[in-house]
Image 1 (cartoon, one colour):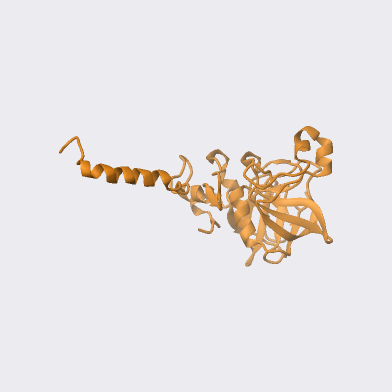
Image 2 (cartoon, helix red, strand yellow):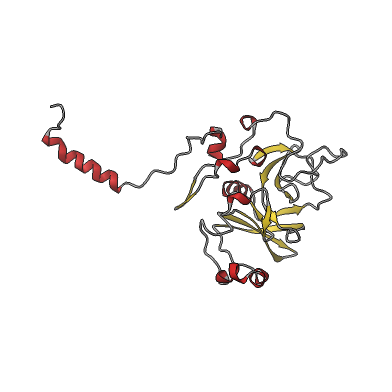
Length: 260
């Protein structure tokens, strides 16, 4: 019997092979962590099945500790549920009760292009359609001209998996808080003016935000406000770095907000 199988088993094995070939592929594994990345971070920023689409993992080389989504101390008079964007530090804060906030790393507009002031989010959309503005097409017709009629939502769409639409005085500002198809941009000032997050982070923020949410975008003079108790001197600003993170804090001690 060694080295061969009974003939009566061959049809059954053939049938099993056919079933396996027709079965859908399993969802991407979130258990294996890339070298140098903790399993916890790998789970938060790993591939995500979103309907029929699979959002790719954020490559580990971009997962610097200061860019990981986390809950932090945040001293503000803004009510819980408010979004505060500090474009000069490259962070977005979702205010929580008890002088806390969930902090997300972001990409912001290049100099002179960013949104400033207050806004309200009346609309939020999954896999939004993108249409470049008239000024974007006029400035760079080669890059944006082909999309003057818009681009359907999808993995190649620059708005990413979700978008929160910023309005002011009842009118669309054409600025968005959204995902991205360029993971390397997070922490940079590279966008046409909108506020980008990794898709894994915009999924989390989108689930927490309701229409009517207020958005406050800090000025350069106010950058860092909220990261120290009221009345204390603001820390030196270094874009993309949290100057008040507890010394020695590592990814293992961070508060992760992924909802499994």
